[in-house]
Length: 158
Image (cartoon, rainbow, N blue to C red):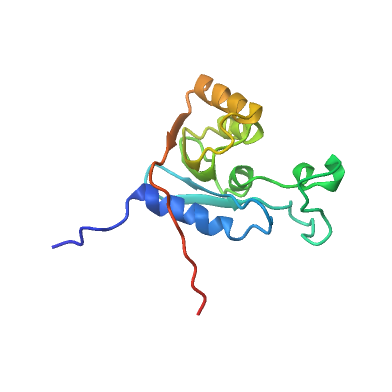
């Protein structure tokens, strides 16, 4: 008889997104994303961090101050990293992300042809960025699914 308590695809892929987020060096917010095709194959993974060639030690991680003194103008979000790092087209895929995408990531998701966003946290739901994001995603027909059960990833180093 098969094992009855295997995790669901949603839990599996959100777990990969959380594991990927652990690669982020952001001291405040770690976000991970995984793009999956219709056959449940991982196409690409991303997390929030600086662009290739931009040292984590030379750019600011602050979240207050003038824009050039903060991380916001430099950091590439997890969703965009996953899209840009993909070895193939992500058209028709789903993206699993630990935090609902901002308006800039929503534009990239729509333009890339991703058809579904599965997300966990929506802690910025009332922000103008997320309101704009949801408006565009809805207009473009991108399905948005919030997981009701939180996925926890625990890493034990041996």
